[in-house]
Amino acid sequence: MFDQGSAHALAYGALDQVLADGFVHPSSRQAMFSVVDDLRSRSAAADTLRRAESISVEFHKLECAARLSDGAAKRASIEELRNLAVQWLDARIAD
Image (cartoon, rainbow, N blue to C red; front, side, top):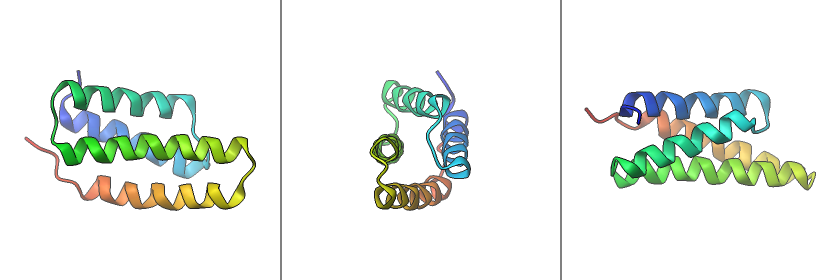
């Protein structure tokens, strides 16, 4: 189990890696699974859990777009991940 600050940092690190490289590394996907599982087990705030789940879902969309060689879908996923990164950074970390 992570403390919320560590979970927040792990999720942002995964986002940063995906945005820098333009594809989802297995370690990034696993990091988000771990963050979501941890947030669920701690009964974290619904908005925090929803944001983490949205990042995980968008990782999946980006992977699918890459497998299908769908450039437009890939660009849309990258843009959405940028928006989610901003939201994730703007979110307050609970004490």
